[in-house]
Image (cartoon, rainbow, N blue to C red; front, side, top):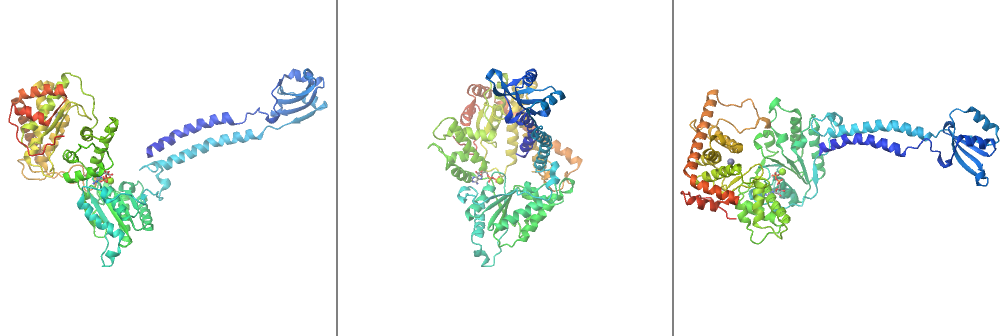
Length: 628
Ligand code: ADP
Ligand code: MG
Ligand code: ZN
């Protein structure tokens, strides 16, 4: 948005300049335009002299510094009626002037019209003015970009960057699947609605609530619902909007926000992404950021500054509570923390029910089946899923959403847009072997999630896909499950290698190998699942820029580092051998499945298992396998 403004302004300058010239050409008065005296007929100079000599000329009006004349004379060809002509006079003809003055005719000289001078002057002025105005806008605009060159121009001023909604129109019934959080926050609604109930018994009303949870779980929605239930205005700002290049801008924004909120109390202030301002002070690369610290200090001051009973409640949201400055979490500030987690099966069902309210569903649709098919989906994913399904339904000109659209929408939400199927070729065969490799290893290892379907229809980046039904409980994962995942991920490459030979393996396994490496490394360094013993050797990656210190990165010696690498290699080697063994031992059924896959493009999990069961023993898996 900001960038595009800048571009518009940049382009508007040349446009204005060109426009100006066109306009000047079109509208500025022509210097030979002689006003209302203008005569349309022209007369040659010689004719004019002749008329002058024969005393036909009545009057002469000189224009344009004596170069043009409007001559009034009697026309012998028109019964001596008086006519007007326009005559171009030769440049310097003093004799003519003397001749005119001696003759008995009315002679008038009109000075050049001032307008043209004014226009000329304005014309000279307009261009610089436009240029300066353009530059000025440019600077003002770019000053909104962090670090923009015009920052100094509005230094100290703060633009209101927060939004206010008098009525959010969202109620608790619109938020589903996060019952605990809703219960906790029910109380906040009462604080806003009937503070007397608490103050009467001497209770201090909390000022701040911190919502903690991954993106898309409904934190913003929940905050809006609180304001909606309590019927108070909703002020919202994102933490990243506080932080500017110049020291003091963010702080003055905080002041503005609280001033406005106090005028509108009771109300609710919502600060999204509070980790952008609220990070540990004095941390991060370069020892910290003055501006952010000032903004944070201002926020803390404001929170301390108003009495608990003014009717302002601040709700902040973050998915990184661990990087927050401890001063923010002290009593009297964000002393209440509410977890907003990704929903479980029941929660997903409830969220689907909320979003299905305004959609037309075919009667055979089971929201429960959809909920089962979508472990790990957040509220935002589910809302998106139903919306995609509705769009597909409209595109297919159907009356109501059917299970077909839901299935396509799930695939699309998870793996991206569907591409066109490959034509039969060697590479299609190779991809088929790769996918069947994943699927068969996944099917024959007990701890692996069951296959849901295998397909050769490309989607997103992938040219073929094997879908597994993830288990409901994704919280705890056992060592055997991790090894199974690594083996399953290596199944694709193993099949390529065994069927086509070492020289023919492809880059298609790149994504699988990344996953394999990350998983096995975490087994060694974070989960203590190797011969190195139960040690946590690495924190979560990627914290350097999120605050905290980065100097204490490696918590182990060079020697340990070498041993970690060796352990990771051992795990991967073991898993790869295991995957290759499964491929080799099941070559007959793999060949049959590949032919079937190339013919049908998609094989679903149930059919896949039945075919494999004719050749090998398929372990029972406890996961519910939805039949959609
Ligand atoms: P967050 O702020 O946690 O990133 P949002 O509140 O912005 O997530 O959620 C985005 C959208 O997803 C919402 O507008 C809503 O349509 C949907 N959504 C998310 N969580 C829920 C939920 N628990 N119940 C109903 N809808 C939800
Ligand atoms: Mg949000
Ligand atoms: Zn693969």
